[in-house]
Every structure is written in C-alpha cells, then in structure tokens.
Amino acid sequence: VGFKLILLRRFEVRSLLQRRVEAMGNLMNSWCSNLIDPAGLQARRNTLYQPEEEGKSVTEKRTQFVGPVLHSDVIFDMCATDDPNVMLTCADDKTVKRYDWKQGIVIDSWEGHTKCVNCVCFSKQHRAVFSGSRDRTVCHWKLGDSDPVRVLAGHDLTVQCLDLNSEENLLVSGSRDYSVRTWDIETGQTIMNQKIHRNVVTSIKCIPGEPTFIQSSEDLKLRLWDCRTGRVEQAYESGEYFPWSCDVTADGLHFLTSNNGFCQTGCEVKLWDRRQTTPLSECLGHSEAVVSCSFLPALSETGDNAAAAGQLLAVTSSKDQTIRVWDTFSGEMLSVTRMNGQFGSHCMEVGSSEITCVEVAVDPSTRRTLVMAGCVSAFVGVWEKEQDHFLNPVAFSGAPGL
Image 1 (cartoon, rainbow, N blue to C red):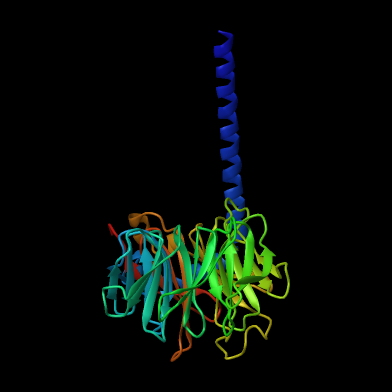
Image 2 (image 1 turned 120 degrees about the vertical axis):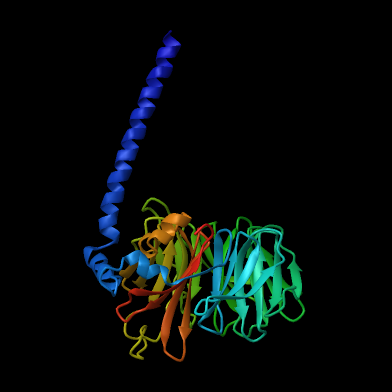
C-alpha cells in the first residue's frame, strides 16, 4: 500500500509540473510574439498584402501565384543560378530540380542519388550542377542531361554542404564524418581531405577571390581554412548553440552565422569580422532554430554602398516559419514575413510551413533583389525586396496534396 501511495504521489507531482511548464510556455510565447513582431511591422504587412479588388479575399489573391509541384518531400536546399528567374532545389525525395519560377516550368529533373539530397550548388562557368546526399556522394550534373557526369565518392557519412570557389575550378564539401574535402572540377579527384574530431560540418562558404573557405560545425566552432595548405588559419568560438548556416560578404571581411536554438533561446544571428575572434553584433528575434542566412547585395536601391553607409543587410529563415530582414551592424530587425500568413489556405492544407532554406538572387537588368525560400511542405516561394525592406510575394510553387 505504501509503495502504491508513493507512485500515486509522484504521478500527481509530475502532472502538476507539466501543467506549470505548459502555462509558462504559453506565457512566454505570448510575450515573445509581441517582442519579435512589433505592432508597426505587423500593421505595415497588413497594409501591404491587402487585396487589390473589393470583395476579393486574401487567399484568392495569393493562390494566383501557385505553380507546379516540384518535390514530393521536404526541400532541404536551394541555389540561385545565372538567371534570376531560375532556381535549383533538392529534397528528401532524392531529386534535384532546375525550376523556372516565372514561367512555372521544371527545366531539368535529376535522379541519381539513393538517399535524400541535402545540398546543391551551381557553376556558371561549367554550366553544371553539384549535389550532395545522405548516400555519402556528390553528383556532378550537366544542364540538359539526365545522367550524372561523374559521382564523387570519399565521404564516410552524409554530405551536408557544398560550395565552389570564385574560379569555379574547386568544389568544397563538408560532411558529418568530421571532414572537409576539396575536389578538382575537371577530374573529380580529391585535392584536400582534412578531418578534425567532432567537426560535424553544418555549412561551408568560400571566400571570394581567395583560396580560403569558412565552415561552421556542431562542435560550436567556425573554422577558416586555407585550401593550399589544408590548415585552419583561424578558429572562432560560436557560443553555446552551434551555427547551422554561414555566409560571407563579397569583400570577404565579414561572416554571418545563424544558430540552432529553440524556444526563444539561442536563436540569434551573429555578424563577425574575420579579423576578430568575437562577434561584432547579434540579431535577436527568431523564436526557433535559424536554419539559413544570406547577406543581401551590397548595393542599395539608390545605388549607394549600403555597408559604407553603415548598413550590412541580411535575410534569415527559421523553423519559426518566418523570414526576416536585418541590419546586421545594428542588429535591428527591418521586416518579418510569416509563411503561415503569407500563403493563406495554401499552407494550412499542405501542412507545416516550417522554412528549411533561403537564397538571394539579383536581376541585373532591373536591379531587383529576390528572396527565395523552401519549406518542409515541399513548396518554394519567391519574394521581391522592396525599398523599405519588406518582402512582396511574387510566385509560389505547388505542393503535394494541394
């Protein structure tokens, strides 16, 4: 009897604690929603996305942008190409797509990986596409050809990220096997293979015009590598939560990282000066893991250099279903785009609008800055950044089950 009473008491205490935790969670969510989405920003967005015609619902206006279905499962990565109207996407359905979002046409569809495709990048010089997969390989594809040019094998675990150097003669890959590799594009041969214990690579970006690249890791570090020597030039401590994504400015002086936090903790975006070992600033506002980040073009709409004027703009996406534009120098949040409100019933019908990746493209003829994002629900969206930094919806792909 005494043993049963002890068990009953433990159950009552556990139930009480669970109710208190839930109550605190609801209170924090309510408080943070006011903190991360100021009334002015929300009011501006409500005005921006009102229907143009009287009596026409917001959902009706938005659904006119929906295009064909691209993937049957989670989109993990996307990449801009030399055509601002064409993007590359890869997904859990083991495929890579080249998609013209303006015309709503899938130009190329590549199937060759045996497991999900985690990352993709584009070579303008070689007119080629490279994709990394959980099957531990990198595939080299040629535009217009369904068969891979070659398959690059060497990693022991999933290939997590890829990038090309400025000359596009070197491909850099990072894996969960603790290693980074460089590959000769022409021959497919491994040039450098370096492994550091616990260096679970999450993201890689090559420094423009230099034989170096930056990589983030789950061991809470950023590492700046020299491709010539195969050595780490500089290591940076990222903080308590590991950086999920990173980016580099065109001049190579600044890095951007986004962290894998949760429940309003550790969800910051950090700006780094490569000459310093601590971040210059932090951007706070996301409430869940910030899975992707990208600097916006250095030239503002007026033609002035934004960085010289005291601004260095960036866009981020998060599991909290938002895309945010930041002034990274000051840490100020300039706009918020909510995916669950952006697509109306489109998101509600297909399921989660949790964002997995974000990419930036520039139309040189019109000087438009385009922001593209992919979702867990296997659809993509395209927005045009306005002069006030708000994102105006342009086009969306379809999604399975819609």
